[in-house]
Picture 1 (cartoon, rainbow, N blue to C red):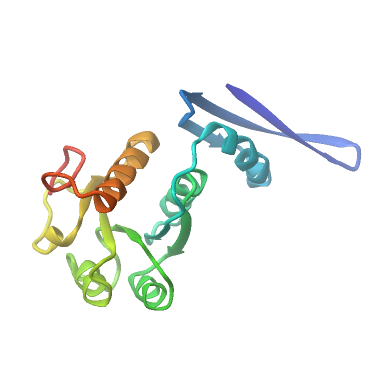
Picture 2: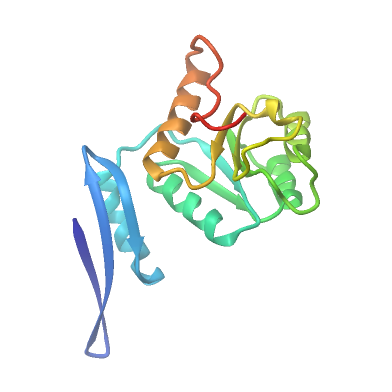
Amino acid sequence: MVLYVCQQDTGVHACDLLQINCSDRKLNTLFIARPAARRAALRWLEKCVSKVNPMVILCVDDDPAGLMARRLVLSIAGYDVLTACSGDAALRILGSHHVDLVVTDHFLPGFADAEIMVSMKQMKPEVLLVLLTGTPVLPPGTELADLVLIKGIAPPQFLAAIAKLVEGRQAPAEGNPRGNGGPR
């Protein structure tokens, strides 16, 4: 499905192309040509994507593009999303806000290996941790993660993995809900 969002500005129509592929009320693809179209896209997508129980998710990444993409996908899915562009900022937010789940990049400046997860689990052991990695081999300490995902996972699979982890926390299931077939 393609949606055009037009703004009228001094008699000139500037159109932003939004390519949205929704099937069975699940988001498959989202492309927003200009940031100005974001509000209109979010309103329209609310009809397309079913809401989940509002949870607070903290996303941590030193890559602004990846951070913004995950924030957008999780927000559209109905989660309340906080963001941090560094490990230190993430720890400050975690210490001062209610957070149910953390999605963190594996390699963050100032933190070796899985140090960020160790610090987070010491602060709030009940918080679910999702580790995003682009490497096939993980260092010691990643066993603290409740879920390990490979960077570049498609939004539908990313959201499904998060939902499964959350559901597992609400109603414990057999086994450990780790990974998406990637490394541990």
